[in-house]
Each structure stands twice: as structure tokens, then as C-alpha cells.
Length: 116
Image (cartoon, rainbow, N blue to C red):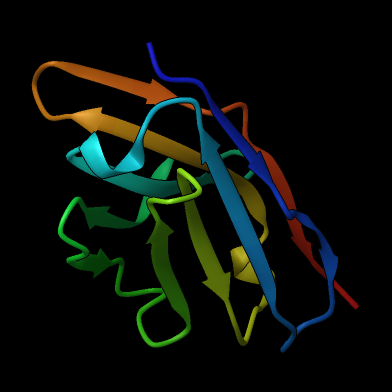
């Protein structure tokens, strides 16, 4: 079992930045795929982006060019750097770790609110 703990959420003004962290209880270097998802009120959870064990990333079109996912395997931590935030980025952000088709674990989520 892999435990994931997100941190770094909060209130930020439009145009601002935040960095979310996801600390894993297992070696992130051995996790095939880690990702960030988000869920806004009244909406389904959606993929923000993912990073593979070799560092390859993909992003949702809505965040491409503004968000960056990275991983520090020495710290067993994955990050989500969010820049140029706007109100549509307001959501609970979840970290996910998975070995596709075998197992998947979720963190408890961290709230990000973009408001003036």
C-alpha cells in the first residue's frame, strides 16, 4: 500500500502561483505513474497531468504551459508547480500513484482557491 500526503494548497490571487507537494510512503522511483487530478465543486474529477518513472509528462490542455509536474525520487515527492492561476483552477487537488491495471492510490486532497 502507498500512502500519499498532499500539501501546499491555499488561497491565491488570480495570476499568482502555488506549488503543491505529494509525499509518498514508497519509493517514487519505483512507481510507474504519478499524477495530479482536481475536482471543482459540482464537477467530475479531471486529470491535470502525469509523470512517469522516467520523467515523461503529459498535461491537460487547460493547464498546459502554466503547470509543471516534477518528481524528486530522493525525497519520494512529486510536485505540481502552478503559475498564472485563475478562478477556473479552484478545486481540490489530488495526488495519485498507480501501476496501471494493478493498483492505484489516492491522497486526501488539498484545496486550492483562486480569488481576489
